[in-house]
Length: 322
Length: 234
Image (cartoon, rainbow over all chains, first blue to last red; front, top):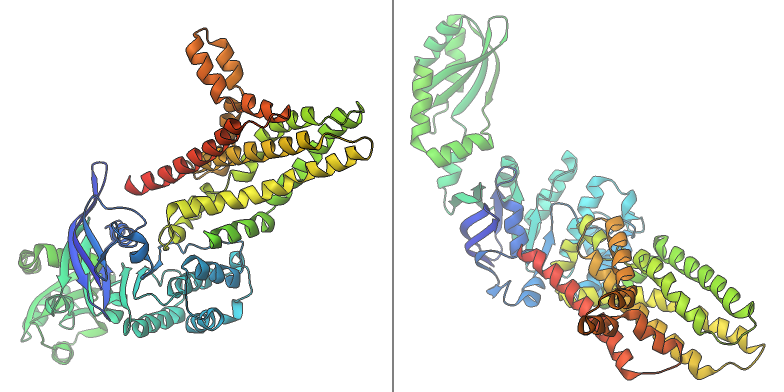
């Protein structure tokens, strides 16, 4: 279990982390979402005892990381943003070193072998880390965090630098680990957090923007009813036509993509699926739908939504009406 | 501490630094030995040991320059500092590893003593005192080097700063003599590494000198721990 209470970290005048609190229960995967420089890594560095906090408390299984660092640290596996690898060692030497460093009590050879199988680095076990690709280095970093089978795993952007296949593998591995570990993982990729985490904490400029305990955040992130369509036809007529469709709340033309082809952003009522109606309406009026997809929310959209709430929606509506 | 010690010793020999240090130490001490002892046809090795101090001022920074700065630069300190190990354990492991390499270097002086003994019987107690002095002096120098390494991420900066620091410590006697106020000049000469080491090369085994070097080692290791601690609170 991880508990953070009123944590702050100041660098001079700059507040890197500003009075944040959250909690991750046993067997829960908590996603820490935020843009670059939001304070994700700083928070993780505080949780793992790498740096201290200015104010507040971080508890690992009820143990304060500043008051009893050795005991708290023995419960944590940490994969920092840049994996802490000794480049001149082989994977085998490195993992053995970490094993000794963490004063691990599990049977050495079988434990390390299990980890290597889990993150799929068994075939590079005897190679020098310097010569491995970024993806493999990342996996060795993850292996390092798993040594000693700690209760709590703290992973700072664990899928950075991996290829799409590896990303899927690592995500499913994290999901698997989440069943019997407490996992905190940070990311600036929304879909990743949505795919893996049970709970999402959104952080921006050192402050928690949203702590999703129930479905309020997932509702905010639900985007089924937002559609991006590329339609061939006169812009004003198309908009008029789309607005006439039942359940459509707003429609705006974003940009001209080809001659007479515009991209339209359509928002329907919560839960309404207007794709079929849109198709018929366009067909009846002789417009061609060239592309249709549900629009993905960017992190910025989410922050806008979460920080400004309704006002943004109203503004958007006004814009589209103009 | 054990894990860090083993890794450090290994890394001295997977990187060229361990070999460079030992080769340079063996070569330069051999030159000093042949010039000061063999050429003069004397069994007294005290001048050899005295000049080895200058060699240490140059070579110890090479031995210690990467100890902490490289960890910071490669961010591997994140692995060490988030492991269940105390800061003192980390610093002590690094110190002992550097000290082991250094001891391998100093061991060569015993070979010189054996060479000398082939010509005439040397005063073994004096030579023993000299070796102990050199070991203690080296330990203190290594601690100073690690302390300098804890300030920076750059190995070159770390080496240059430790070189300057060791030179200053060497010059304490001279600086002390230049100061007209007797009280301050006394402090300098009491803190002078050279003065303390002189005693050993004459074959004087003064317990206060032994304690001086041991305390200097502990003080600088402690300061290194403080520097690392302070950075966490920055």
